[in-house]
Amino acid sequence: MKIYKILFFIEILATVLALSGCATYLPAPVEEARVQTATPGALANLPQATASSKRPGAPAESATAIKRAETQATAVTRSEAPTARSPEMLFAALAAAGFDYKRGGKSMASGFDCSGLVAHVFLQAYDVKLPHNAAAQSAQGSPIERAALEPGDLVFFNTERRPYSHVGIYLGDERFIHAPKPGAVVRTENMKLGYWNKRYDGARRIVD
Figure (cartoon, rainbow, N blue to C red):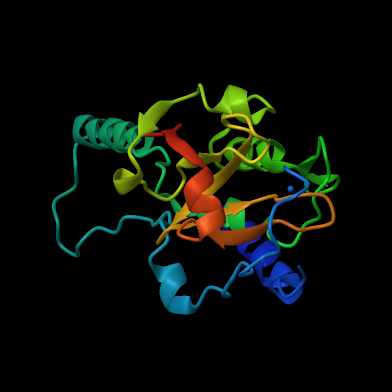
C-alpha cells in the first residue's frame, strides 16, 4: 500500500536526520526534520479500505439497491481526493528529509534542489506536475495569507535578491521543509526565525 511504503522510507530516513537545497548563502540549519515512526494508533487514523458486513438477519438487498450503493461509494471515493492536509502529502515531503541538495535534482536518486523537491512531492502525492522553477511555481494555484497557511501549501522566500527565488512546503506550526543549498540536506526550518521571516514572499495553495 502506498502509505505504508512511504512510512517505510520515513523509518529508514529517521536514522539520517541528525545530519546537517537554493541560495548558496543560506544560514546554517537551526533544526533538523523530526520524523517519528508511525505508531499503531496513528496508523489506525489513516484511511483504510474496509469490507462492509451485513447484520445477521438483515433482509437481502435488491440488485437495484446494491447498484445504487456501489455508485454512491464510487462518487464518495472520487470526491474525497487528497487535500492539502492529507497524510500522503506530509509523508511524501518528510520521506525526502535527509537527502542531499543537488542543483537541478528532483528525485531521491539524484537529490533535490528547492523547486525539485516541491515538484517531486506533488507528483508523488497528487500526480500533479509542477514546473521545476520556484518563480514559476509561485504562479500556480491560489495566493494564501500567512495566517491561513495549511500543511501542503507552498511558501516562498527572497534568498537571491529577487522575489520567489526559494520555495518550501509548509508543514504546520510555522515550520516548512525545503532543500536549502549545496552541501546541505533536505530539512525543516522555522519561518519565525529572523532570516526567513524578513525574506518571506508569500504562499500559494496548489491543491484545495
